[in-house]
Length: 434
Image (cartoon, rainbow, N blue to C red; front, side, top):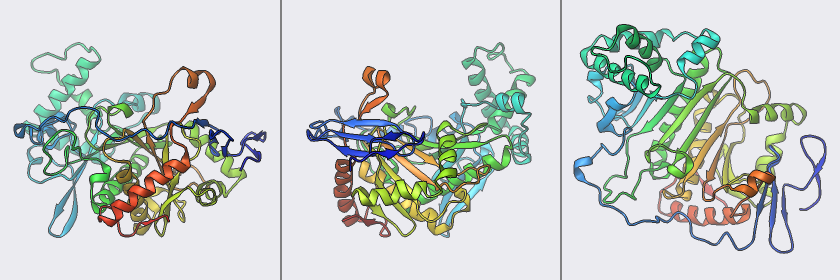
């Protein structure tokens, strides 16, 4: 376990996972080279336990707890799509007008981010990007109704005030300002997939939040499918998008603005730094992900659970304790995977989130092969438990102190997953590791 191996630069490095005589575990991420140390005696502390007195939920605030709640839909941007549940199953509605927002119950909504990482102006002025015909038609129809025009006008004022633009409080808002802001509100390349619930059904206090793991496996699958569809549409609608980042921040300690379940889908005009490293390495080592993913996890006793087409395991060499889910037998773009592959991926991500628990801050990061890349890179998700704070030691050494080693993380997760499986809270397709 402690023999040297060859790293990405060709130089010898420590084995990815080494336990020293005093119990210290040293990790080196086999994909990124990130170094992590886990020191003995620090993993036993409880996590995922509320650290304050629960407050009762005011019934008058039902569905109005934050801007993502169903009772405050006019505080978010015009919907691109929503998923509703009917007697016949799941149905997607697209291009709704403001007057139609309350006509159905949106289990999941796809909306542009009000404050994008890369704005419409960035894409338009840098690359000449133009809105898709679907976006243009939706904007024109939305602005043609009184409620739609009032909604967009208020959002335009919010964006203008945020950047200190002149005329934000003019009555009426100047037509040029409205037109300029409206384009970005419908043609943004930073989108958000928002779940319906803020709290679990029947919640009585404010610690009973609705997280990924509180969804049913079927609900989570729809959440994943809508996110994958958003990724596909951003690539298709923006020829200058080289990579689309998908991530979920849960709770404030992970960077979330609201304690309301949502994923973010963000197009950027270059490959991510990690993706560039991956592409170079896979060209030299086509079996990179199989060798350092499922196979290495099996050898080291780190597998948490399996489905037919995916595997979940405790990750090695992450800045925070991390559970990783790999699709095993599919290396195309995410939207090209079969229904069963997506379902198996979703079931394992859901199981890992359920085992993580509602009160653990976490980042869920997706990684995939973009259309412009021709090497085999599987869809995978990394769920990072944000249970520690990086400090001066990490900044000065780039060695990260992680409080839970991969074996301990695996044991904690498997123990909890067995309980959840017995309770029927995760998919019956999930095979929990022995």
